[in-house]
Length: 519
Image 1 (cartoon, helix red, strand yellow):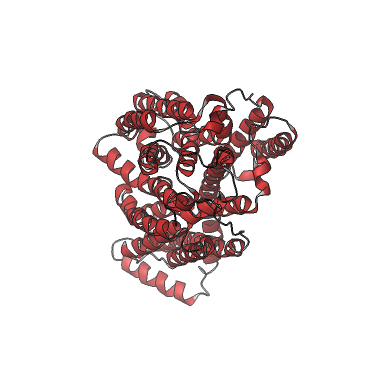
Image 2 (tube, helix red, strand yellow):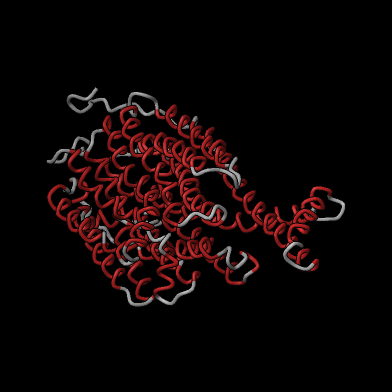
């Protein structure tokens, strides 16, 4: 009945309007990363305490994402979208004005609550504004914010922090937010089926279970490695609570008459497969984004801003390739595009797994370029085919779940990197140390050469001690290098292993009555 609804304004103009808010929100998921040392130093906080600036935002963001469908149906999509932009903009100003760490964390929670619903609502607005035949092009525009923004975040954050101060990474949201509010007021409108559901009641039990599940899960992912995972009592308790809350949430949402999140959309094969692939893609994307700057700063000695520059080509490649891929969607089957994308993504990860301590910056930039191309070939067709079996009325709820999956995938990817770097370096170090024995000829030769050189400037005992220290420092570097290499290789394997799922997607034909002029 409402499938043929069309907005009053041009879909392309609407896309530009809502993408302002989307880019601003997604940028803030990563822009504060490189500024954490400055924030901690300025607010008298430790490095561990400063990470709550990131965690608090992600927790609040994740909690709001699945509630997007209910919020839009109850209050109206336009009203919620504009309220989110307003809350996000005001809380950004509060972040910049924060006088201590607790004040900044509270402001970041408010910022996460405002930003959580903003992205899925923007995605739903764009999907509804374009006819089915043009949704690939719409998602190409949407991908500019969701894919490029978190890649450019560390570079922009590093430049702003070095040139001005960390406060300005939040202040830059103010003019963008005000202009986005103006554009939303002018362009966005509620479709008829949204207006019909304004009296929907909230599912308090489901919301409570959702909050407990996501909050405990996010804290586990963020702090688990610091506590050595299950060796800590609180980690075990949080895990039990998170699992029980998740089971209770799923059971309740399937049995209640008015669920907060309609989980019945999982009966559509394309939607379920799409979420699995998005979880994998987000894990690889955010994991790689977190790992490359760490590699460049800790092992190669690059400053924060220069390490951010190494990731910039990936954003540039993704930006331009996405427009090309958007034109292919609808002309080339999404399965083929996804196969190309995951193959290219795996190739870039395998290229990064060949890094060593003698590489130039170009050896990081080239795989990053390839990575950006691969992501572009994945994101647009994946979003389109994931939503292909859903009706207009289901898009609001589905986009909330889709973006929640992206958020969780990113958190899992970062937690994976943190854990495997720590444990992998320990494993490689234990293996390499076993070769530092008098029976190992290369070690003996290197040690003797170092000792004789140092003996020219120190007594024999001191020279031997310094020779051992120098060799162990090299060993430690090599152990950490192999941990990075292992992680990149595992990301490549993850991309390869998800490719068989692409073949399970169901082909969905276009509507019988296409929009006038569509081909």
